[in-house]
Length: 248
Image (cartoon, rainbow, N blue to C red; front, side, top):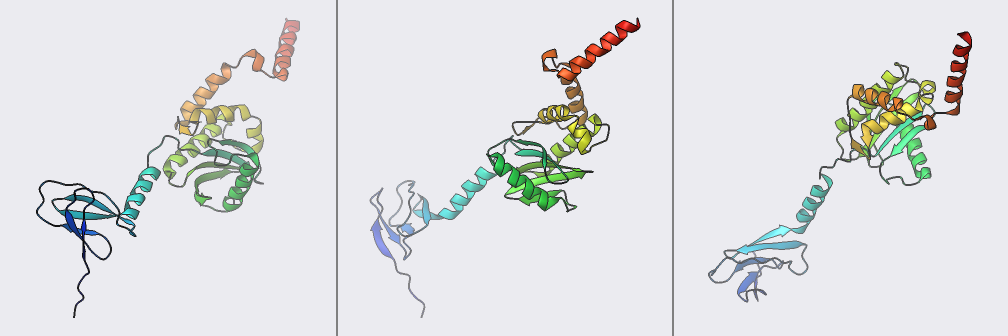
């Protein structure tokens, strides 16, 4: 013998019309013919579902968890120009040569160094180019005794991050005449800082063409005023002028 569902009568709080509830407290139907389109939202007692709009005497039930999931997915997948969280260059011991963070994911130097050590230990012996670490997407490549990293959020497009990585590496390769290794890089740190600023600004990708990056770095290098030159550069220039004046 089949069980008969238990229903009970109640009165709609908004309209005052009687309606029928099932044993879970959901609105099944509104008694009597509908006079006009009605809309009612609410949550039955003890339920995690919302009653959708009542139209034409029929109520739809919308699970609340689906509503929350949809809102969270929309928030997470909302497009953003802030693609890059950090750019790192480490040596073959995992020590920092260059690091630039574009948000407060790791606010202190201690946290940054711990992250850099962790990322190096996880990647320096692998052949892959992409890793997921500490909830972040990491793309990387190595050259002799250098390791280059570009970091984004866990849902960031890996191809966008790889574009930044390749642009930086190819730009440095041209600037260092294909000698991308630690000693050459340390001798050209000013060019490295300028190149990174041309490619990414505040986490936003500005340039992906290494030719354009190298060209702009060269122009900015020519515009450096005398007050920003090093003492050794000034002395060397003076020595050259004195030498040529004596030879005339």
